[in-house]
Length: 478
Image (cartoon, rainbow, N blue to C red; front, top):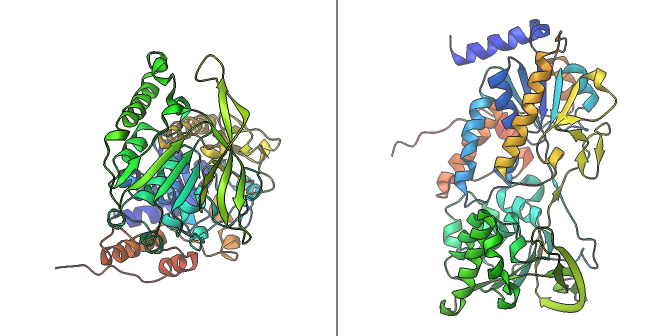
């Protein structure tokens, strides 16, 4: 029996005998959703429907990982194997709260798992934050990664000085993209429209501003190493920011000690680095919080007024950031706000508070359990913290809970997506896994023409057109 006929048979079985197998719906086809599906398929017999807002899968792996980190995207190969299992279906271009409701899902599934992540940008709430060229890092990342909602981002790179507020891995991703030689970026899957704008960038100096000190940086040592090794780029630290830091080294846990030692090593090498006319300057600044953005009469940002902070407390981990009366001004014509992401309440019936779905270890706290069990995993349940490994661990843990709950259930009486698929089809063009494969192949072919791994389609309409086409790959026999 072929794989295709096996899948067809399985779908027939699910449509006629659904009472015998539990139905699970996962809302969000990003890392948390796929890791949960991976655990479920390995540990319980069930049918899984992955529902995704975009026509394409993989979420932050596709749209959040930096283009020069292709190795991180290799997990897509594992996710693809999960999606190709006969008991798993992918339904793209279906939006919770618009095309389907949470109550619909709970009525037709034995378990519903929400994993749609954190798609909004946190804001500072300070004066002139709406000035031109004050940009959320998430929007910039989405822009260079081909996220359809960010493809038309207006960004002016004609200034020579820019700043990033925040010192996490996303902030360093933004810095690296801005400061990397354009010929190196051309080898990645960065979008062509971003390449064209970045090629004309005039930025020579880039500040990385954090409210606490070197001992509290949120970026990882891997990200810092990459930044320090950038060609034609010099990292310039402020020596005064590192007072007494060396005395803390013996008390630090190994990961924090290693990254601190790397910063101190780079600081000591400052004077020996040569500078040419092509050299760009990367300038981390600590103990500073933005007070307001400075603007001109055209509402263009011209700088940032910063409050100088001090840290109080005995332990470096629990030290509190205390503002002082001292003010510093950094002149710049472009600012990226990289202070974190936040989730949204996608459906009116999602139990939501303070940016999270209310839950205890992934079990959603609500009063409607009679409609079917509701769960949450990933950033939607934990907050936007950690790297992909943290998301994997959380998704596995919640999936294990789902498995235990389903094994203890006496009767499976839910019908799954087939019951209301026609209703959804009247509202949106559903893109299945075969449709995604057409999009995938099209992007790879377009990338080959440019010497890149792929050229992403940035239009939802174009994605749907390709998904519904008879697109075929023309083999290159040269």
